[in-house]
Length: 467
Ligand SMILES: [Zn+2]
Image (cartoon, rainbow, N blue to C red; front, side, top):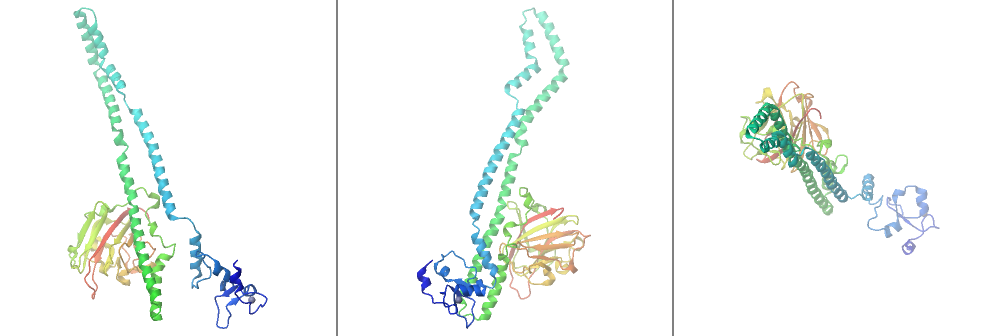
């Protein structure tokens, strides 16, 4: 304890026998900020006081539970909890990758051994092959007859006899040869049978799925920087900004932060991607490949659709010249199946994009009429569907991924982002469970809006029996 600093403080106003050790932070005009230990005991509100010694002598890493003043005490508790948790993510990732490598190496070595053993069992050594052939061809017998030291008359008879016997056994010989050939073929086929190359490429494909999360991480980093800048702006400008403006900006920023701050909702690292099935590629985007169809509606035919085989992505590009238009994929979405579609934005998406379904018997009726989809970018409850959780996600930006879950039997489409905002179709525009539907994307332009171009990617498509 730093005696010197303590001695500088006066005696308590109320308890004259005690020296002041505390300062009261939650005070009103009449209060004296200096308090002694007895004041604290009498008052019982420990959160209203700071211990002077701790203030003066604690290190930079000390976090006060009751300082600075906050509206939401939970924030400080959470911060303390986070700081006390010493598990280092970098270390965890390193360990996980190291374990991963070691376990994979072990597993591969183990399998290599078993596969080699399996091959060895089928292997036919040269010697064994020669023995079998020798036996089959009866070369030895032939040799013996030819080596006989008898007259050629006798040899002639013996040879004939031997040949007749061999010809009689033709069928058995065929069978034996066939068997031998089969054995050799089986053996030669072993490398192909184990499909090592295929396993390897599937595995690499799985590893490459990390790229999606890396992209999300980078995107989050960008957002963090952006929010930090906005926050700095509010803090530095508060001396000259009107209170009303500060209040408004703080509210706006809080709304942005809300999306990131709640741990339970902050699951961008945890994209619902069949967690139990990490090593099978479930993306069936190929089903949509070259199935795009354009209607006669306005500039539909100017929409460009590209399929990137390397990345398994279908990109849809709308240029500035397109005022209205739509594209659909001629792949029947059936009522006894469910569908998961993920779409990624590459920009702010102008102000008018609708994803949804169009009905087989109604292909010319645009989604503007059926409203069986959700409008992004534009805040419109008619096209925007119903909010189930969170809010309308009407502001889009680069990297945002929307998951669409289609259940024709339940007549519903749900739209969800990584932060658990969920929208679905309005009750009056539900799907018709008897119909066959197609995936569609509609573009439009609001009356006073500048022409815009936009690119969106379908990054995932899966047909499943259950969600
Ligand atoms: Zn006192």
